[in-house]
Length: 203
Image 1 (cartoon, rainbow, N blue to C red):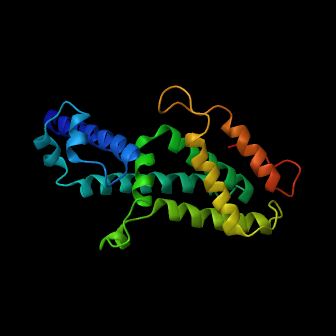
Image 2: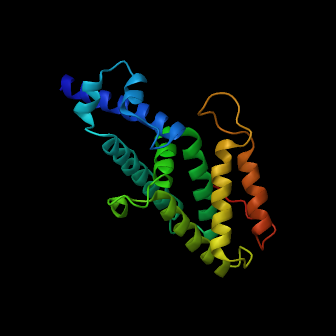
């Protein structure tokens, strides 16, 4: 049991190290050597858990997909309005990107996918799934009279720009330190898109 726990911790250590590299450099410029260099482990230990860079990337993307599905289920609870679900989803994604380097790395990995790769069709695209989810929520919010009748695809893209912007704008301190004021920035954005005077909801 102790050996299994050590193996699990080693695997998690390599995933964190790889996530830092992928988030910083992207897929093409990340090497197995760089991942090992971020740990006190050997290259043999890394290959014992992950036989290739592709396997590490796949593990990170799969974890991000599971995290995204959990967030989506929570945000799309039956008792929420579409406006409340949009707010919860956008703020939840922004928080994940700011605080979870594995999630951040996985989204960059999906963005870095090379079109000529034969296995691309089998790689889940968290970003595209999030975009489609936001489009559907915007349409529902428009039917509910909560959002202005702009094209849903355009509004979804604007919301994703906001989500990614929280990762880069006004960053201070440590890498995973939350950004100041970005929840209020969301309020300004969604109120500008809203047909209602006030759409603030409790998450």
